[in-house]
Length: 599
Image (cartoon, one colour):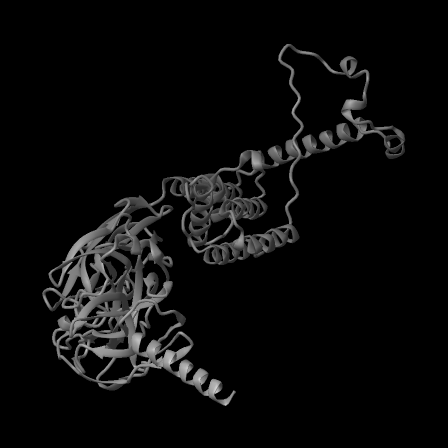
């Protein structure tokens, strides 16, 4: 029995030894080099080496630790070699690493479980030293052969503060199908920059030669960034997940781009204009007015626009200096610029309403705008031409005032003539005229008294509405063109106006601006009708304006009322609205309404 057990044990040992000798398996790691430049990719292979391919991998390879290094690519490798006439199968993956900064790094041990046994590779130490070249950093993969990589690149590495810089992020692949396997794009940190995203253009896939090899490329992100401070600005790596085939199946792999450094320069102090506000780019300035001849009851729109390419966020439009007796209202700003593939382009403009208080000639002084041109590397100051306005007295108001003055003069002359007649004894005609007037007045009072019914009888009579009289045809005198129009005169009071103003305040935030302008028009009309005692049937801008001035309202207030009313009327039918700040419009309406409501 003992002999049998010994023989059996020996047989098991022998078979195990034969199997081990027959199936030799090892797991190793290899690096192309152990010292690289900053921005250069390091390729490290992890290989299972065996004299047969009949082994079974129980657990896929666990990635090694790689603190301070990013995995930017992965590819499968398989080859057969012969050593001393015996075949050796080498199967594994090659990872590409990139360092974020200079220093000493270690790629840790990778592990894999084969036929129930755990195999561990050796760690690899790496030294990273700076290359001192931004171009090398941006194109660090030109000498590599990885199937997928991500590249960040800037159009200029040493721009001025606020200068426009293009930033492109491209994905390069050897297999076109990989472009459809990307997901979860992640933006790098852009601290110290003011970024503007450009929408990706369709069909931006291209074929490019990189390091002498053909790749398919796709721009997956583009920005225009504006440095906000001088000095070094680090743009962190961008990343995207790409589903890649590995030794152990298809898995999402994080592909990271290279880091990019921008060294921004301060704008020069030499030659900097006093009115410079930070605009950097290439610009032109246009100024214009919508009329050069007007009357005192009209307004003129003065428009200033800056057109070009650059950082529009740093543009402050020049302030208009209005001459005396030319009232200036707050300007309305409008932006019309976008970020295109070639940069930020468009214009920014302001429209200022000017209203002359007196007739005469006015000269609007030139305005100036300064910017820094990074191409010419110097400051440029643009200056507009002066604009002359010819203002005449408003015709309607002038005629009204003249007519009123004539009436006052005629009445004064009549009084003076009557005084002279009394002094000189020619007052008989006055007594005769006075007597006739007195007798006429007494006669009219007597006729009116006779024609009126007693108060009691009046109250006893039943009054029916017009449409309730069945015999209405018998009581009315008929004519061929007889028409009946019943007008109800609206009752307008201070409380009603206050309620409308409160409602107008709420409509500042209305979805449809036209609701605001319709109510604003109603408020302005109602307060003017209440002040002038003119009903809606006789309402017109010119008549109301004349009446308001004759009632003692200052002409400048009347002009503002008229501008607001015409603006509201125009806004109701303007396509897309007037692009105005409704809060400011409401405050102006409130101020004018309060002025007109004063006793």
